[in-house]
Image (cartoon, protein in one colour):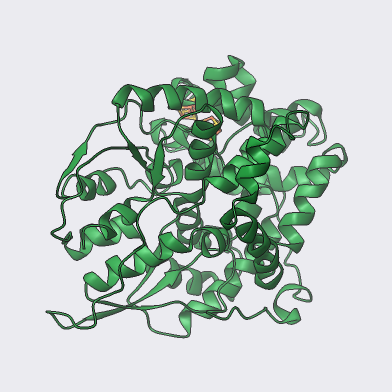
Length: 445
Ligand code: SF4
Ligand code: SF4
């Protein structure tokens, strides 16, 4: 598949729309913000509050800080605002727990946007490097393919594993070892996906597009192959538009909202060229972002309606298979599995039952429920690289829960969670296998 480098006009020279401030955005959301009755019901669901025990690291505390900035009582440059907003994983467990319907995730993105634009103390060291990578690597499929292609080459030749196990990295920061272990977690661990059948017992009836993802396309090609195979088994003609770009989730979560908007406009243009019946995504973080393009482009009169039409067709692969009428293959697998729910599937997209409904229909699969499967693993996109100690502390609880199931395989539907849990298990000396549910489904055909 050839990737087409976006022309310079779509990314570099596009005019930047006027950007509303946090105060104006919060005013627009006043009914939702004022709906916060400070009840604290969200607090027990917040992983950073559980780990740190500080009200400022809870949803309620962060909402207080946002209101203080919006009302001019606190500078967006203040250490408290930057620090406590920065420590939020963005898991959105507080949203599903909130009885008042506070749109925390949206407010968080806008608050971080203000930090990036207004807080000079934020633009240093790691934050500056992160901005550079997001704005100059993840916006260019060609550059990303070059970098991740090299990573994949090193991975597939065993050089990363050699480096990690040689002890040469013992003196390096934990972040470096974590990064290498995350790369190893992207290695295919199931059998290769069998070729799609040449003929079908039923006529293929719908045409779908695969949102292939940027990191997923380069490091999880096996997951995309499994997704295509399963879709074909469900009478889908699968297209993979070559000029699609990153969904923009990492950018939106990091406060790079204008870049996220440019990426969103590009994807809308690419996918609306063909009249696809559905746009299928197998990474929960990407899926949540694609479904939220209407909110991201709400003040863009040229794209708002197009964003709504685009997002209405986006389906997570698990959600789609249930809607389509799931038909697993006949091959028995003889495995004991558990399932960890990605936050951006469970809390952001509210897809809570579909993955388990699929898994429990697979022949020969023993399913063991994971205690607190809906609690964040600590991944948070690149959160685990920015805040490795806190992310690993949260992950330790998840690994303990996983061990209690006695499962050989952990299923999860998001590349970031898979890399975070897989790397944590590896660094802890565990031989746990991690798969996307669709990879296990593909093995039954
Ligand atoms: S965000 Fe919702 S759950 Fe949390 S304190 Fe406010 S009203 Fe209560
Ligand atoms: S998004 Fe997650 S980490 Fe952030 S305040 Fe809500 S529950 Fe806590």
